[in-house]
Length: 346
Image (cartoon, rainbow, N blue to C red; front, top):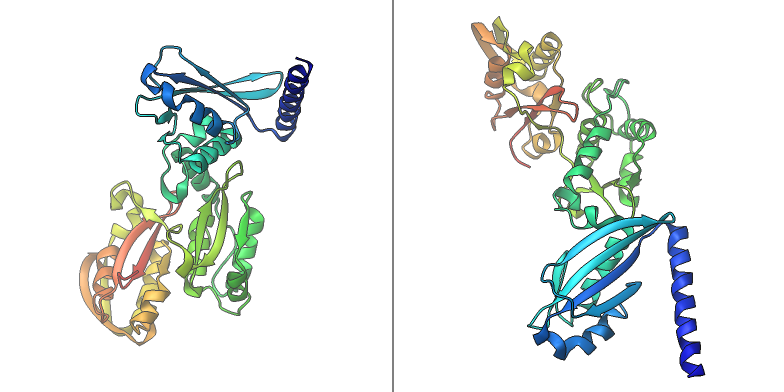
């Protein structure tokens, strides 16, 4: 009897120490109650052994009626407590909020517990969208990247533009070693993007170097950004977004009409002149232009038309390139409009 009491006291002490450690780390205490159906009694002992090694603080198996997994979170004495209700089904599988598991799924259950402990149920069980982030996390990231950039970018070294934006944002930006070498080059930003948002400028500035911006988030951590080689990224932050309103409303100046008289003018000169008139930035996909051997200064364009919209004129001028260049009206993270010019190839 003394030996049993000693073991129980040791177990209670360990649980108390674990609870204190969790309180200090800010993680949650995770408790699990498993409701056992009558036909699942045969696997009860095996599940007891599995659940003892997946990182749960307190486990209780009961024959209480109930057939729906559930989770709730509360706070006591400054410590967050996550209570999970699971169901041991007739087929011997364990249903928990976040999944249905077999006895062989120890690692999956352990990972779920780890996420619940660090992030809570709201984040862990929320639907994950792009980059493995929740809708709320994506909105928050977009809001951070919507900050207006107030310095001039044209003719500045790409690495310096990235550094200046990095210093102005509250979000962490991690630059991969291979990307650091590229950003240390003397490559210059070719467009004036002052006034656009940090996210759009970052994505556009690093693109000619073969780099992309990738959001990510580790369990229990804040969302961060990484600048990596495009070849190692399955998805990346885009250069701007599709417009959600009518083009005329998004950029009314583009749809004003003017008389045009151009005869074998360099396409680059024509576009620069229009850009100054409409005050809508033009950003170029230099990667696709280089891939197709297009040099805007060498493309000669002719366009003589009365009362044509600026947008229509730009589209016609781009159509005189071979291959034809594609025109898109996009917006940055703060809904500021800009034009994206490319060959249409990613």
